[in-house]
Image (tube, rainbow, N blue to C red):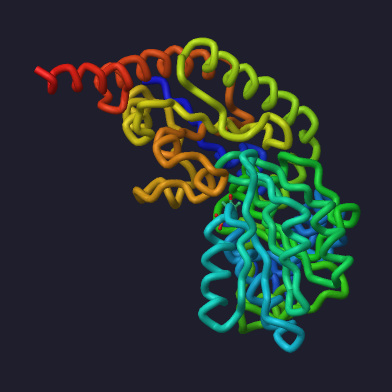
Length: 397
Ligand SMILES: *Cc1c(COP(=O)(O)O)cnc(C)c1O
């Protein structure tokens, strides 16, 4: 059976070039980067090279990049670290209702410790309002944490305007850029970002590795305590192969960025326009503007998203109802709800995310299957307006 992966926002396959660069660091070059002999030095040099590559793609300097175990740890470190560093200045944090759980649950954890958190609303396109942000600021505000781009419906936030407001009020600005990295041009200096979370497995690198950008001059306490790795800021023996892979993935992402964006946008727009043409009663969640190039999130009215996912799985098509974490649960997407979508439309929403290995042939196959599956499911769906009428007629007799 054909297998078509359309869940690139959940994770991406490791690219061949990335794997090749990683392999020697599992065996021949297995040294501990802290050791004072040749294979240790080799590992240390490899980390330095990877750090430069990650720094380069976001316009940072090498000394501002700290490797972590991934996006989740980077979010935790940025938010908990800032909260602790500035606890004498205030206890108020501003974030949004559509953040990844790595941010939301970290904020909820801090609320239990006595911090106050404002969760900003978003509009129907998933974007926050700069006016609402500025109104939420108090004398106690120490951190603004707003994601660069949303993992479920792809909305890209007005990052430069947010950082301008943060700077004006002397507040630290953190952004979760896990989805934006490799999909949107990022220059942390131009954008005025203080802290930025990144993850390797969303950009064709290995899992379990990421980084936190910490602007020079900003000091936050460690999250992980132990040895002196990462210039004493993040303890634990470095995952050298993973770091090397992340570095290579970042280098490739930077080199391919323009082409990657153009190709994905073309395929994405084709997919959306064909679905809209061929299947009645569908709509796009959010706007095509300010959207990740590979994100498609659509409502298929009168159908339960889970049923659609299962039917597609039988045809070898892998998509999702939202984030990887929410997919395992039955709770409706907090992101789509925050955008004001009625709950039945949230349950009828499906996310397709395309990537570098998606072809036009894949999309055409998916379109054919999708059209047939939606038709079939609607024939048997109790939510279908025609079926509701039939049922009503039966009851009347
Ligand atoms: C995937 C993701 C994370 C978590 O990153 P991990 O490396 O999997 O821990 C955080 N934020 C966003 C927006 C994500 O998409």
